[in-house]
Amino acid sequence: MNLIDRAADLLCHARHAVALTGAGVSTHSGIPDFRTPGSGMWEQVDPLEVASVFAFRRKPEAFFNWIRPLARLLIEAQPNPAHFALAQLEAAGVLKAVITQNIDGLHQRAGSRRVLEVHGHLRECTCVRCYRVFLTEQFVETFLSEGGVPHCPSCGNVLKPNVILYGEQLPALAMQAAQRETRQCDAMLIAGSSLEVAPVSELPRFAQHSGARLVLVNLQPTYLDEQADVTICGDVVNVLPQIVQACGAPSQNG
Image (tube, rainbow, N blue to C red):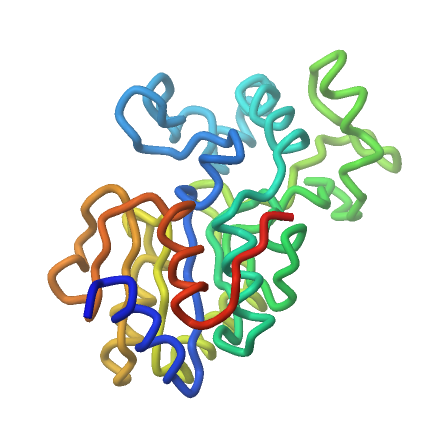
């Protein structure tokens, strides 16, 4: 039995399978990951200088200058075959949930229904002073065309996107739900994650300690390669649709 068939067999015979996804799932949608040599977002900047909560409080303009080109990519991005494959696995009853480190919303746009965004999302923003929450879409066009720092319509203070910066706590409800899924699952599909950012990187280990089997699909090595039940070194846009087909359901392409 080849690796694709082994992965499909493990997932399809699981009682409660979940997926954990990282930036590698969205690179084929035009969104760069963080650590790929030559193209990762941290190649040219220090994340603690532009993407930490401490830097944001001190100098929010540096954060918004950095995220502006990324915001345009996120708006223009479309789901790719990896997103559609995961949605198809959920529709077929194989996956019960997708736990994602991504903030792009592409899993939902591909059709995944239960998505736990443990690093936040860009659909909303919150005032750092009065804590009112606004839909990001009402500020996006002005921000993309003019730049600058978005300000609260109510009190005039800085608006912060509801994404998790370095030094911030993860969103409690999403993380609690992800931990519940991790405890309940008997199989976890890890796709496109370097597993380098704690505490999410520890979820597969917790799942394994609870008796879950692990299927790992990633281009780059991870700390779990030797411990996973099935490790496939490959591109998720190629591998995940093959797993869907091996499970007996054709993949979607939108």
